[in-house]
Length: 409
Picture: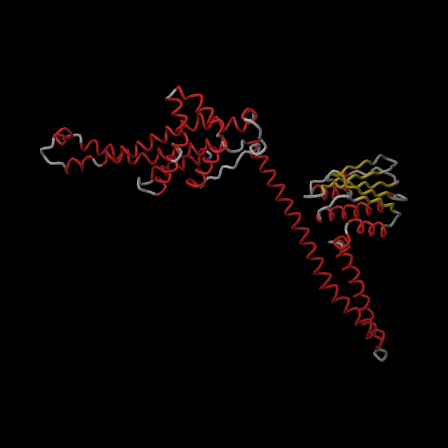
């Protein structure tokens, strides 16, 4: 918690009345931590059981840590995630203690936790003392006039009552400060450190990005289905009707027939453009027959000969298949436009959970992504699924593009 947030929390705690819900929540939270540190204090006060109880705490680090996290979550609403390395540490006691995660947990349970429990005990004592002192005046007033204790407290009852009231007002501030210290200590020692938190955040961002890529791919498929089943079918029906009218209507004026002919040709052109658009969004063959058949279709439609070698032995995620398909399609288009090549060799392999695409041509070479060619787009497309793209293109050729993609996201 930043210092500004701490100051605001402390200011709010000073303004709280002693009977407020927040004040009692803080007190309940810190008081619940006292029993968890009782074995350590027993070991300190009884040297004969120092080593056995210390060893017991070290052996019970995991349940003690789980209990502290549960206390923070249930009584204070603070979630302390476990360190990233906690699940990976296994084996005997010495093996677990050699890890940095367990050393931080041991420091909390053997040193920091007991000190905080001592502060919590002081807060509980202050509440009891405040309640007792704040009512001294009432006790004295209710005592019979001939009671010796009333005579002894004469003149002190007002002072003690005022002191109790002041202590009653100040104890919520002390409880809030102790609760904040417990939360900060638990976050630092029982939770992940800064490096682990950053690593966890990177994992969350990676998962979020993978979900976003899948969502975008699913949306492209939905649009492709809607266009194929909706607009394309209506345009096809329109073109058929115009073609039928063009062939059967013979007694219409020439200008009317010319309008029908123009409309028929425009409808056919629109169908061709829409078909190309649908194929660019998500080719149906990729979903129906897989990557091998889709790449065979690209090779057959290419403007230059393509020798295709495909060996897929592992299952590939649909999103990765789409990235591979469009990467090959754009790469072949770039070769046809810029490389002045006579042929292209395309190799597709899966091994070790990775999909490897190698596209090589016998063109003039000199391909450079920094000059604004399509290679930049290919690299970004591969990076969208944690893939890599490398280009080897010396002047005079040949050019080899190697793309590696994960088979699963």
